[in-house]
Image 1 (spheres, rainbow, N blue to C red):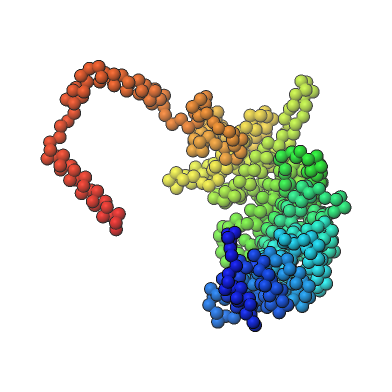
Image 2: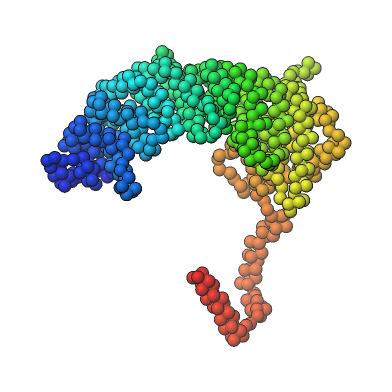
Length: 627
């Protein structure tokens, strides 16, 4: 709501406040109520701080309105009551927390069985979260009093976390929990709250809520909300840890619990070891793991040495955390690969349909591919060996061809294969002390065991056959296949040992096709790359554009966007001189008469006829546009 600074108190509202036996509903019906709250009207503040009025306001935001009211007006008073309770009036906060009866009435809304009205839930969360946030005109001691009172009330409730977590299916309740933890001010208050939540096993209980009990996706939204809460907490906690110069004794216990390998092991066992598995739980678990591995990089160096020290310390700590997580993940790689072959959602769908069809690729398998891509990019040798032991690359290549239109999958295949093909082991030559490239175990596995070149050539041939059948429309994976082959050719030219290894895996037909595709100038791959670069204006979509400054297109050595031939360019260059010569000849000689003699003279009746035709066409066009 937008306010101007020229508001003057309403005489009608002043007379309304002076009325005897004034009720809250009469106040809520006045159109100036929110503006008067903003201006801290003294009489209005006194009226709203009355215990009976406060209780009535809380009742409005926690009680379902009657159904016999028009839907457009049904929640009008509830909305206004929430706006009043959350307005910038510190005295209202103090009055609300000072009365335990009113505070319990507000909290009792959560003690009802789910599901609750989502609109009332948003009113409750906004009001309860307001008690933790410091107001603009609130002094520090008053804020501490309110926070301490609210925290003592929370700790005194029987199983407060259980009450909160039973409503995890509502996104706003997880937002409230995150808001309470992140927006409480004062290191002592925040540390006290974190210690209490950690003692109540908040992280363990959230992970435990990811258990699938019935195998049905009824709780999918709950799983998403849990994952979103944990991911946001990890990011915000790490951002605070590397940017705030806090006392060394102030430790985020919840973040430490999340980063501990025991929590990772509990999470993996929860989503993978149950008898019944769910798409929602697996996706939520992978989302959390990816957030734990992710590093929030700070690119700019800080002038503050203390702050830069915290950033460097956070980077070192993150490296240790990722190492522990990878150590736990290593023992569960095979289970993730099994889910890639038989995801729970696809198995359940086929069982119910009782038909033989190609199922959708699904979000579960896509997130598993994303996880494997991130794990491969960590360059951890133990993880890569565990992945190779599961035959993951063979599965990935089969899925690449099978789901030829899923570009999300193709992107992960591209990343995995390009990393694998470029994973040379570097060494120093004993003869000239130069760096040499040796084949890595991952390269040998992909080239020899998985026969990556043969399968990529098979995808190329499959596309050619489909193009002939579908009038030239190529398959969806071709863009990524071209990128993979281009990377493979680059690696091919870097190592003779890799050339020999690839050649040993091909039969005669495959070898001939490989040479045909990868020919230096006229090969099919070069033709496709040239066409692709032309369509993309020579821009690589996989590479960031580092040229952020202005470009002098006129003086560039090579014009990427040149669509004219040399003949056309020479004609354009000569045009100004030709015009000058023509004009000079016109001035110096009787050129005008010769031009006029060559012009065709139209009879008057023919000119009038043409004008009438043009008029008729224009009139008909206007009629069509009007219709």
